[in-house]
Length: 403
Ligand SMILES: Cc1ncc(COP(=O)(O)O)c(C=O)c1O
Image (cartoon, rainbow, N blue to C red; front, side):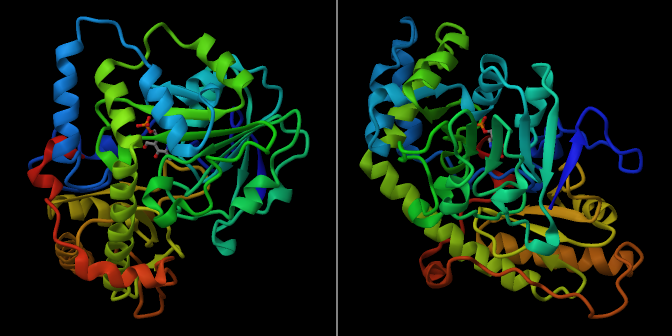
């Protein structure tokens, strides 16, 4: 684990990653041709009942949005007072609000993680320091690595792209008076029981939890998420928002997805994902050339594979999009991120990966025999058995609207 220089002055030997590269670029306009393992939106979403609720809301479009019911529902879902909730146009809007509205002196972003928080901070004129977690430590966070006087700290949990789930207790140790601690929980609803979530905590000073409806519910195009924070922070962020930032259909989705039945549905989906992930990991264990970062807790896994760029390119020719790793600070060209899909898709992917590696004949990977090891394992032992309940969900190649 190390602290890097301000991201504005990158080290000469390591090219600065493109923070604005995201997985959607890997599949844009290619929905029909590529099976998408690059974007971590759950397959087969949004569910029919949710599409219907959103479609019904179109009858209200003549009126300006009224966020009160959504706010109430989100607050109830997390057992919080309404003043602690702010609906946003996705977690992405929240990153911009935080960067623009808060008086930050020393911002620290824990990497590797989703790059938009840092990009938003930089765009708002802040220098950003990075605490870069080490693969040798399993990308785990030692709270002592964060400078004591940092007054804004951003960390993802579970973390994209490493799939590491930090213990809530470790994150809680980062909270202190005079500091805003941002925990991006965009993928927390994909973790069975949402264990290690800080969403309902009101005792931690400066805590800001971000949630997204994008991933589990397949609403990337609707733009809806929310902030959970102390009322004064919520009020500051709200003042920085434009008027009516979240559309009526998005508010309806937030209300619907916060209802107890929806939360139960997402909880079930999290178990299915855990079982599917166990299957993907078992298939990846057949490849001595690669190492899987583990234990993985998110709906994606991070893979280290020497020569990954050539493999990624060959996989595209074979019909699969995977996420490059080199745009994440702290990773490099040897990393790929793979979305967890249903078993049939993972089986097809394993076949394609075998073909890609055989085609490249060890040239890409530099592999010289079975020396590698798959270290990853599913974080959810018992849940892995729930796989019997998993039906093969629709392939994204057949549902381009549901990336
Ligand atoms: C970790 C993480 N946080 C936040 C986001 C943004 O989510 P939203 O669609 O809610 O803006 C993403 C999107 O990829 C993400 O991976």
